[in-house]
Amino acid sequence: MDRYAVFGNPIGQSKSPFIHGQFAMQCAQCLQYEAVLAPVDGFADSWQQFVATGGKGGNVTVPFKEQAYQLAEVLSERAEQARAVNTLYFNSDGQLCGDNTDGIGLVSDLKRIGISLQDSTVLLLGAGGACRGVIGPLLDSGIKQLVLANRTVSKAVAIVANFDSRVIPSDVTDIPALNYQLVINGTSSGLTDERPDIAAKHLTACQLAYDMVYGAKPTAFMLWAKANGVPQQADGLGMLLSQAAAAFTIWRGVIPDIEPVMALLKQQFAA
Ligand code: ATR
Image: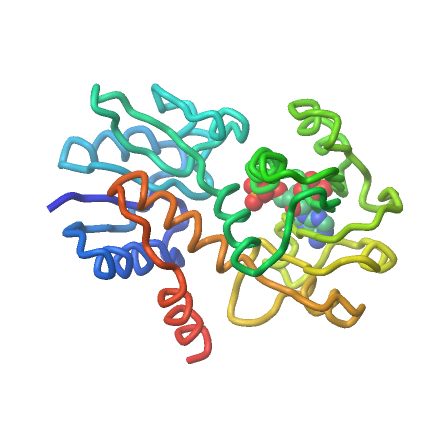
């Protein structure tokens, strides 16, 4: 049976084995998908061991996406842009290929929700790996302008240098006054029940407040956006499922439907 795995540290919380197990059943694919706890400084060894025992492909999560980027022999354009790899597989020449499906996961989820990105103005909060990985796919989907606002502005400035003039860096306390149709929280603030400290005036034109973090309850950012009149809020569960679906398609050549798996995960959260 073909073996796949997600590599992370910690990994116990990962939904990926459940998600890919559901995708496999849905698409009648005979495969095994496990979770591997790799030592923080030992991703490459864990991966090689997995491959030596029949591993065909992998997902990579925190903190190994940069190490996977270093390990891959062939990189997709979006992995190059993100400087991070979340999906590993072998091509027909046996070379290890690294891709990054996080950004298209976000864009697919925004489409699923019904947001039109063409010519839109987007405010993206944060300047860690999560934000760096989604800027390229957002630009590719036709947005007019993206302001990248971070608490530590130097990190936003460094990321913006890799993109075209549609992307502008900013300090969270000094965000340009534009009509943002979409505000995305790409910071990790939701993990500690906090939100980025931005002014509510930036939400005036906002149709959707999207938090890349997900959990059983709406995040502090989503609740704040709702209280300030934003008509729609979403967490990152759809992004998680969509990046997984894109990885599954790379490995297996079939496109799973995320909706039934999302319904099951929501049931688990509610239990
Ligand atoms: P990841 O790879 O998941 O993006 P990271 O590289 O640790 O994680 O980046 C976390 C991001 O969340 C950073 O942009 C961080 O801001 P700083 O660069 O100023 O540290 C941001 N962040 C975390 N907690 C935050 C909070 N409470 N308010 C605002 N920004 C926060």
